[in-house]
Each structure stands twice: as structure tokens, then as C-alpha cells.
Amino acid sequence: MAIRWICTTQDAAWTDRAPAAPGGAAPDLRLSGSRHQAMRGFGGCFNEIGAAALQALADRDRAAVLRELFDPREGCRFNLCRLPVGASDYALEWYSLDEHDGDYGMERFSIERDGRLLIPCVRSALALRPDMTLFASPWSPPTWMKHPRAHNFGRLVQTDAVQRAYALYFVRFVQAYAGEGITIRQIHPQNEPCADQKFPSCLWSGEQMRDFIRDWLAPAFREHGLDCEIWLGTINSDDYDGWANTVLSDPGARACVAGVGYQWAGKGAIQRTYESWPGVPLMQTENECGDGRNSWDYAHYVFGLMRHYISNGAAAYVYWNMVLPPDGECTWGWRQN
Image (cartoon, rainbow, N blue to C red; front, side):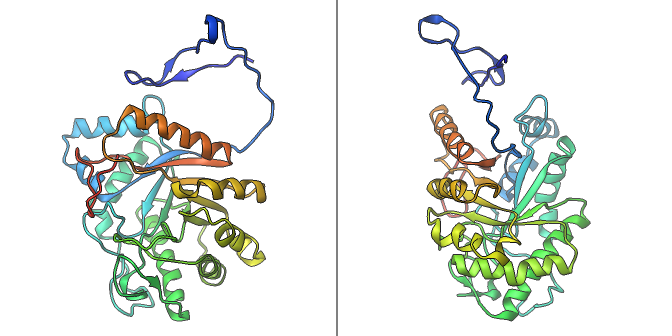
């Protein structure tokens, strides 16, 4: 079997080049013939700060950046990307999609804010990749559903009324985006559920997530006829027993979960999940953030991360920010790549 080597160097992308073996001879390569996971794709996350940076460019420059990211022939060919449900830490300010205290029926739910920056950016990407898969996750529920009442820190209030309303919040999100002609294929119920952060966040236990998916979120999706997968994600912990094993070992929850999504703090847990639950789809949902220097050395480091996750069953690898202003600084003061 002929093997085609495609390399990206510091100076050129997508270059055909056969690697030299020691002594200059052609490398002696053999393929095992084994089949593993089919790759779903690669991508990044749409965020307000990046969308604002794009919007500030001249039309020609904006189009060039979008081609470099999404063009299926000339660009990075991104085809699987993420959206925040409400504010991420790369939103211009912190917000949710229903900050109206006690709106258990989600009557005042709105994605009007998303229509200013995020939705135009997503539409531009879809114009280049109409086959793109989009998944979404919140960084924080609406503050009135949390204790304490804040976008950062805290937990979801564990009452039936709040959990029922929060499941409906996800339903409204998928429906609202469908109304804009944008299909959300997957919901991951919480970004980094194992971290109590100074930016929008919400702590969960594996047991709480299991019960929410099984008893509230999946029934709400079924009731409203949503053709949208629910994934256990985006997990930022190596605690396999407390998360993947806790949820997947419950038959009711397992029937509701389409796969497991791990962020960069789940390097060990994805390996155990791959070995323990063969056949359960896996994704890497957020790349390590970097320090804003966007160096070639860091690109080599990320390639090692990609190799680890894909070798351990991940069928998708998703960057964090795709576009940032020159300093790459978030709302809480960290410069990132």
C-alpha cells in the first residue's frame, strides 16, 4: 500500500514530503490492517471575543481568515465545532440566555445576544462547510438556578423545579438555533464540571450529572422530539470512577448518553474509558489553552496531545479559540493561544 506523507512545517502547510529514514533510505513501514475509530473531525470553539475580532476586519481579510480555518480544500478543513450556551470565559461579558428570576417555563429565553456576533460567525463558517457538526455546552446555568447566585463558582440547585427548568433551557437552545437554520447535533451539559472557577462555571458530581441526564434532560429531549445527542461532557478530570464509570454503569443513563467528551485535563480518564467501554464514542472537546505566544514549539506539544487522545479512542479533536485579538487575553486576564 502506498503511503502519502503530508507535512506542515513552520513555513508551509499541507506539503507533500516523504520522511527520510536513518542513512537516507526510504522508511520501512508496515500497516497492521487493524481498524479503529472512524474520525468525526477537527475544529474549535466559536466565542464572542474571537467573533468581535473577525467582525473588526475588512471584508476581504475576514474572508481570508475564514477560508484558512474552514475551506475544505485550502484551509484547516475544520468540520466539527463547539458553541457556548450563554457566556464562556471568552465572552465579552458574562451572561446567560434567561436571566429572568423564576422563569421556569423559559418564556423569556432568548438568543438575541448570540445574533450580534456568534450566529453571523457560525453562518460564515457554514457557508464554507455546510456539512459541519456543531455541539454546544454551557459554562454556567442562569444565576437564579445556582447557589450562590453568580455566573462564576457555585452549583445547580438540586430541586425538581430547577432541574426541570434547566432541561427546558437546553431544549429552547436547540430549538432557537434550529429557528436560525443552525442545527445543534450534540449537547454536553457542562463545561468543566469538576472545576469551581472565577469565570463562568458550575460544579457537578458524576452522580448529579447521571441523574440530570437520565431523569430530566433526556426525557425533555424526547418530549419535544429533538434529534440531538446528549454526551457526557465536557469532563476535565482524570477521575474515571467518579465520572464515566458512574454514569455509564447506570443502565438508564447509559441508554441516554451518545458518547463521552474529555477536555485536556482528562488524559488518563479517556484511556481508561476507551479500555473499559469499547464501542462508546469518545471526543476530545477542548485543547489546552497555551500562553498566547502561538509558538511552533507549542504546535509540536499539541501534536503530542492529539496523538494521545486519538490513540485512546477520540474520534474528534477540538481546539479552544480559533481566532483572537493579538494579545489573546480573556475576561479574567489569561493570555491564550
